[in-house]
Image (cartoon, rainbow, N blue to C red; front, side, top):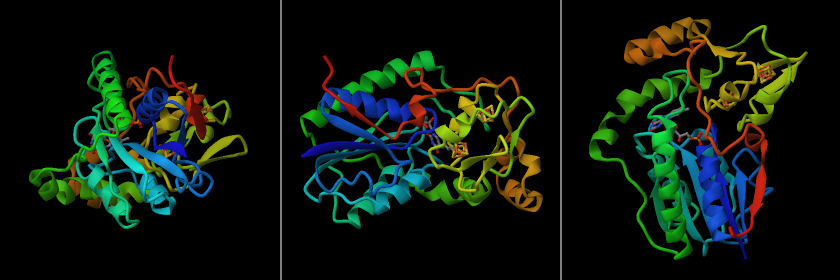
Length: 287
Ligand SMILES: Cc1cc2nc3c(=O)[nH]c(=O)nc-3n(C[C@H](O)[C@H](O)[C@H](O)COP(=O)(O)O)c2cc1C
Ligand code: SF4
Ligand code: SF4
């Protein structure tokens, strides 16, 4: 019986987590949620893992659609690891709800805080050199727990987060369907196609040597941080102005969205741009 870990990643934190855990487990496949779930089912797996960042206090929408379509062995040991920067919110509860609909229970839930990567809102924080070593240590502990098939409840949102979620995150979620309207591509673009290859939502096609955004963007930041020429920008004023006006009345943060030319960008130091283009990897046991 197989072991498979499914991950969604923009800037590599979740892919790194999948690799660390897979390597410790040994003989484990890690599969990006950019793939078609019917190509990599979990119906014949004895162990199934889900690893994902947290977006707007919940699990990213592409991960939701992936898990909804995935066939899973109801007898498998199932684990979930959320990788927020600060607030996990209802991310694991939402995953648990989808799995429960398939008659599946999460046996083990883990939480690993990592560098905040939302480049079009803020520079990365806290510093990677402080956060990454702690995250690596926590991932190894989690891997040991999983090897022992430990049972541990998944993280849940506290009452305050549940109470404030609609008010604080509602406007962002409303904006989500327009998330890629404000992307700009400068004259520095060399038509290399890297942005298109790293996109976990397959949201970028190349047309006449220029990237075209296809309006099913998760704002994961993979394209932004992978462009070798830093040609991708974000200009919120180029989006739907009426909608923006309406949304920014509800949350002033929308008004500061953008990508200053000198803003530092973040990608997990163990994950290369090429790694972000991968669909599936098999990890033998680490030496
Ligand atoms: C669109 C977006 C929304 C985010 N929302 C949250 C959030 O609600 N809570 C949080 O703690 N971190 C949030 N983050 C930060 C990421 O969850 C965090 O940096 C994560 O480790 C990135 O994982 P990745 O490198 O696998 O993409 C957000 C990042 C993005 C891009
Ligand atoms: S990665 Fe950058 S340079 Fe390459 S095609 Fe995309 S925008 Fe152009
Ligand atoms: S277009 Fe860019 S930000 Fe949007 S999902 Fe694709 S890689 Fe992520």
